Amino acid sequence: MLSFASMAAPEVAENVFDVILGTYEEFLLGYALQKGKDGQFSLQQFFTNHSHLGSVRCVAAGGKFVASGSVDETIRLFNMRSRSEMGSLMQHEGTINSLQMYKSSHLFSASDDTTVCVWSTGSWQCLKTLRGHKAEVLSLAVHPSGKLLLSVSKDKTLRTWNLVKGRNAYITNIKAVADFVQWSPDGAYFVIAVGNRLDVYSTEKAGKVHSIDFGKRVGAAAFLSDDVVMLAGDGGNVEVHNVRRKCVYQMFAAHASRVKAMQVVKVPSADDGTFLVTAGSDGSVRVWNVDLENLDASPSLLCEARCGCRITCMAVHSVHEEDSGPRKAKRKKKRKNVAVEGSEQAAEDVSCNDELVENSEDIEQPLDASSDEQTGEAKQVSFSEEIETSQYEIDATESGAEDDDDGGGLNASSNFENEGDARETGTSNQRSRKRKKKAAKQTQAVDKAQSKTTPKRKKRKSNNKP
Image (cartoon, rainbow, N blue to C red; front, side, top):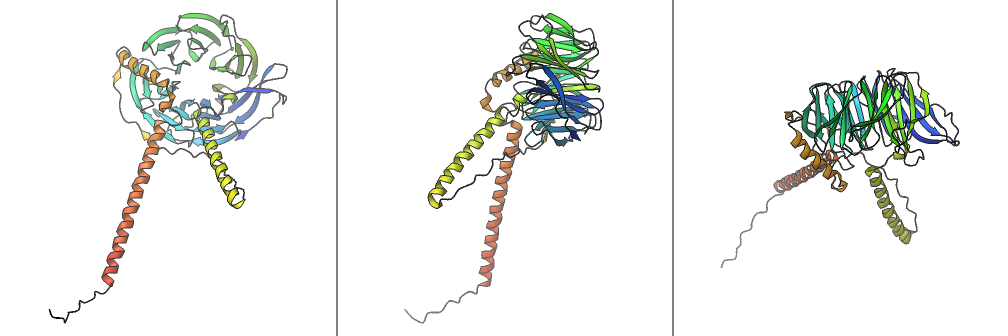
């Protein structure tokens, strides 16, 4: 059930972005950050959903879509543009622990069933099931290029997946159960939360370069820039660290209790610059303004809202990034081609019959790709033993990320989808050949039957003698 609350803010208020909250009480709540005419910010609730049958564990947003995962083993889908519920995905056979959207084209999900699924937002079909972990998968993170995927599990390993080939690249034994993994904006670093510390890994050096001791359990982390990370957890404090210089800028109190989720939002059209959204287990969500030029200064609190539930996860849906990227460009190009063809056809018909031609609306066809399963096993190595291998593979990935025209990564022309298209093309050609062979056999059978029913003419003897 999806219900929308009436907006309390005036109609002239500007909607900056939406904050989606998942709660232990099975609710999914939506708050809109609005900026009034007087320049004041406020959080206004605009929807409540209670479609899950268990507590909500994770939520992700990308383009116009929002997805939520729960202990009821389902993924619920929502369209934020039309403010409607789209349906649910039921591929997994365990609790959905982590979700992440890659732009507006793909959704990744991790579950207690030890698998990671790759979904296409065009058809909402499972394009690939990544298998390899021996225990529950707790968190995943997609590289900004869309060519690598990191996943951590209760089997105390970090797995790196090659999304171009759709298989496991290598395994890292981290010797502890990690809570979450996250990439930096440029993909140069990634962090892993293990208990009270946050380990920082460098893709350039292919190893751990820094470890931050938070003193209490780390619950959330967010990158302000490529080398500045914020971490929070039990106690409600937020610390700001520089992972390259290995120093700390400051610490400020964000909540009275545990910080469950935190995310940095940069809105290009906003004059206030960079926002920080924090959610606490006490049911409060706060929006802060961060000055990137002066990281020693504490962020200023813009607004706050209390939902009255125990918050478990959070995602930010940016209204300025809806339906952006290659998919949007592809549709624009397709509409342009259809418009040109329609205008040419209309001109021909007017010159011949003086009739108007009405062009049909362009409808994007959903992708049809099969759900291949990954059965290959990667060689297990320790992180010190894999430095040379990971260095080579990540460098190759980074060099490939600079050229998006090659079709690598998870763009609209993904390898998963290309494989499905190739199989469809091969199947259609095979069916066409079978039909031709069948028609030829039928023709031969008819000719043979006609030859049997037609009486043979007897040859007349010639009476003319030589």
